[in-house]
Image (tube, rainbow, N blue to C red):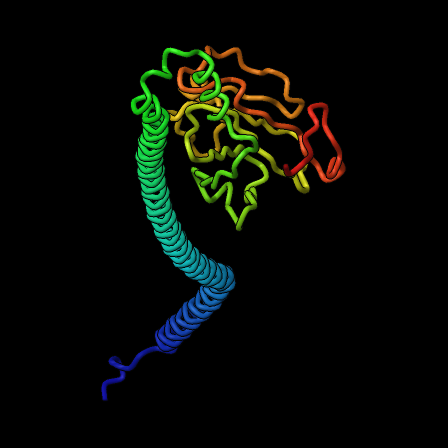
Length: 310
């Protein structure tokens, strides 16, 4: 080996020094890189420490949002249930109201039918009363004509005696009976809801309303006495009188109600004249000889010598 080609100590030292410096620099670089890594790790850890609460808070916020959504869904479900309940209640209410309306219509229909039937019944009863009055009137007139014919027969068989006034007076006196005969009466009751008859008793069934009862036969002439007793009368308020055969009394009416006022003469419980009606054509105002009769007056004489029940 050539001595000249050998490196000098100085060169070797410089070479080794450079290598050492390179190693030192490299070591410094490595050391700087580790510090940077540590710094980066530290910052990373700090960031993670900051991020972790945010993530927890975010998760909690999500949970709160989920819970709120669940509560909203639950509230919506409750609202739907309440709506269904309200709708069901409204349907039940409408059904109940419909049933009430139907029941009311049925009741109104039944009431109207009952009123119609009652009016028809009242009309039929009035027609029957009119027919009965007419039959009784014709029968009475027939009897009266028969009596008149019987009176005229002696005059026809003995014409000479007609010129003498005394036999005529005698004939009139004989036509008046010495004692009154009993007349079989027939009561005419407009409505059994107000008055009924049991044997010879006329009984009120409705104490709160008016009631009128007529009696047949129709009287065309003579003197008639009507006798009776008032038993358990609530207030001694009543009317007794006479009416024309054309009068028809209705249910729950006074005797002088309506057109009957022109054909009725009524006497109150004190028997004072009540209605100033015109004289009745077919009746004599003196034919009604009547007294107020109660149990306390039984067997006592009146001013004209009559007794109760005679």
